[in-house]
Image 1 (cartoon, helix red, strand yellow):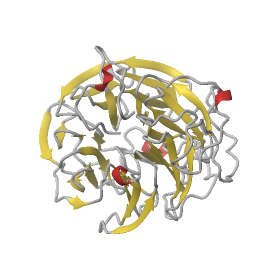
Image 2 (tube, rainbow, N blue to C red):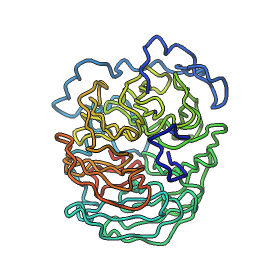
Image 3 (spheres, rainbow, N blue to C red):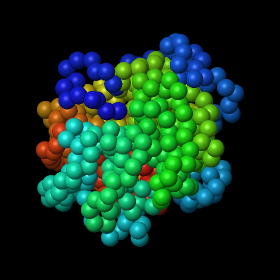
Length: 420
């Protein structure tokens, strides 16, 4: 989520996003049916729901990947590209698996800024800043379109999206949009979902004409911000940072199905980024104030457990083989590396001298992790082999949802490049 001031919040409690370990026994309360209500710990949703899948991340050895792609375990959302490997929904976004649509795109890194209101462009080969584009008042994320041909810089205060040609890196004319803090695309490509945090709404647009088609109101769900989709594409889970909960939405009907409270509800800087496990068995939910990840079951009905990572857990990114999950611990200057199937800790990388790693993505070949340094006005480039800091690049004021381009994959679900 975005802080509205430039004060360095690492030295004191911040009004927006941190995790104390709790035992499984503490996960016994019932979840609230709506975003408002008692702050008591909650785990399961109040509304009846299907039983969780049998396969959920456990702190055990990861099951071996199938030697040949298996048939989809369940039918996907109509119109969604077929599930090639149910064990790894990211199997088509592996290292250098660039589609014909993007293979000739200019390799660039786009850095939006909350305060300076522009997008800086970095050449990833030379680490030089090669362009600066005015983009609005408070630019939050640079988001690849579903067809991966356009990148959108989202300005939630200026109420517009700035389209950037993915092939050339050149900006076009702004597109009106209501309070676009974040932007996602449905797995069938039919809708663009503007996450209007300021209005506690999801606004559904035609992704070509940008005409508004629907609104999903989430009353009292303060801080609605990040999302990911189930493996079958039928369910979306949105985090509500200032409510300590997540909202579960049916993709086909746009209906708000249920709200699930985290066992410990943090309403300052609570639930942040969210990532679907490769086999679809769980969602990992970063919670800054709690200092780690809540694990939500794959049917999005109950919280299973908690994984401690570090102070200010914020962004979630997968390695190119989808076997590792990178967690940016923004308030302690580190990146935790987890097994993406089990949630088990692999290692932790610390940025020399500290820092504020926020959001970004992995390079197309998988060798580098690019992250904005939110409170330090820099971009970090780290090796995914050993976490070594390769480069620290000075940029504008409060860099946020950085986009590395091009990305492997068949289609984009939005944010800074969730591709499958």
